[in-house]
Length: 331
Image (cartoon, rainbow, N blue to C red; front, side, top):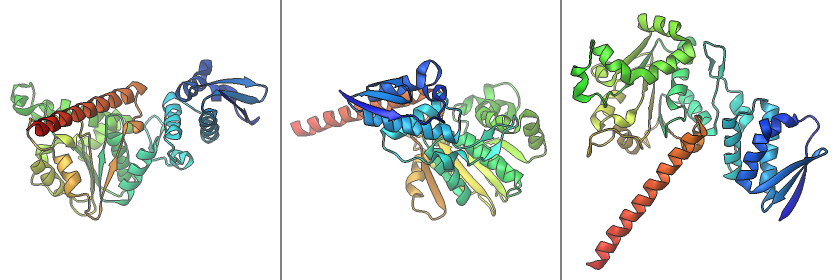
């Protein structure tokens, strides 16, 4: 058992550092296997690895100096980055305000992965954002599109996604074609409404500035002066992906988002997103951003769910590989 004494500067808000009911300190204790107690102006840390706990506390103090609001998502991210020994310039990330929502909330990257994604969208005409749910792929792309329109960099915004789940059942749904496919485009509407507000978003849609359309409607078009986002791209076929990517016109920007662990295509059908990540990886002017569970900015349980599925799938793959190896060896 080791003991380490960490002096806490006078300017630090102890309540903010410790959190409600000492929740922040308890989280650090749990991940590092230590116990911490405040004595006078110093934090006494006891455990097998008090140095790691001390580094996390130092990072938390730095974070409070940058932005005093230390919520659970930010706390857990700082802990995970320090435990993983990863560098993260929070000052640079926090200052990168993409735009403000209709409610006046600054919209900015929250993780290193998100910051790199936003930077790639700024400098490249075509970017693929690939990773699990909750990493902000679509939301940030919509924010960047709206910002580009406001800055007069593009004349319109086009959002599309494949309606794979509908398949041949579209004809059985009530309403016209737009009403049939709207449920599959709802996540794109949600992002627009959150950033622009429902009224402003609807006005821009009525003017034709914003289009939210199924992927099938993209065939035969050439899109100039546009910011185009393809969401749920893992559910495109190879042919659909090629069709979509070749719609790109002059002065346009394309962002493709998807999660290759949630493919809804029929068994045996190759995902266009997986195929594109192999075919286009070395093409100049195209960049790829890969997110992991550490970039998830939803409820902490979402990270754990993603990690649990990943571990389960890895174990199954290893088991299958061993079984095949045993069969070959027994011949």
